[in-house]
Length: 345
Image (cartoon, rainbow, N blue to C red; front, side, top):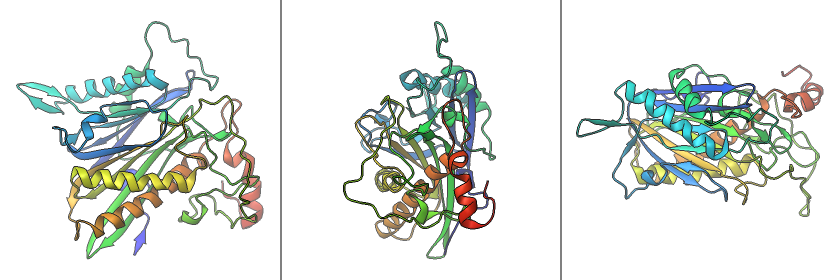
């Protein structure tokens, strides 16, 4: 049996907290995922224009086994500095890799491009992302808001307002209950809706009316469908973190990250383009044992991909209009109302 977690958020995974910080004038922000204990982690990067920090350290052949936080940030390359703020916060708490008396928090990060969204980016000599990273880490908690918050504040998605989304699921693994949670900062070049339709690509994966009750699409996809890409190209990248309480090795976490990338393809078209920096982090809090080193990973990866698709769709569904960028519910809310007979906002 598969069900959503209690709050349908990544924080349903025991030991996971999330913090957000944003600047409304800047129209940008930072999201940080912090495990209560150091966690095994890996990453898979498939976008053609990524901006990352410390991802090489997550390789199976590298020394460091665990991480202490993951950062998803707006600001393009400037946003990578947000990880420094998170490191400062964690170091103050004596959290990190200890080496000869030094404490070094391991905080991989990835960024999305939101520099052309109409916000005031004239920040002077120093970009504000280090401070936003520190603030996001200080705000970490089990509660979590979605949409125009954190790294999702300035995000756009294929002509719609993007945002921060999250989803979770719980399933039975031979008598052991495994929890999977995902969080996504959705700033995709591709579209989350079908051509000339308000129906989301991820409509088959909706649970508990989390997307307003997506109807069946009324169109068939012609093979020669034209897509109108949002211009100018550059407002792109979807960043995802998958968390689970299943016990994983680094190579197993890497395989789950690879499989979880399929969730992007289920929710966004096109995805992994030359202009996107699409990245999926996976972290394991290591509390629940899997029954089989291969079959169990295959199942976990498949379900993680489903959960990623839902988190991406929720990021757009929960977003609110901002500036010139109209939200999904503003544009299509009446459509959902007419299809379901009840208001879904």
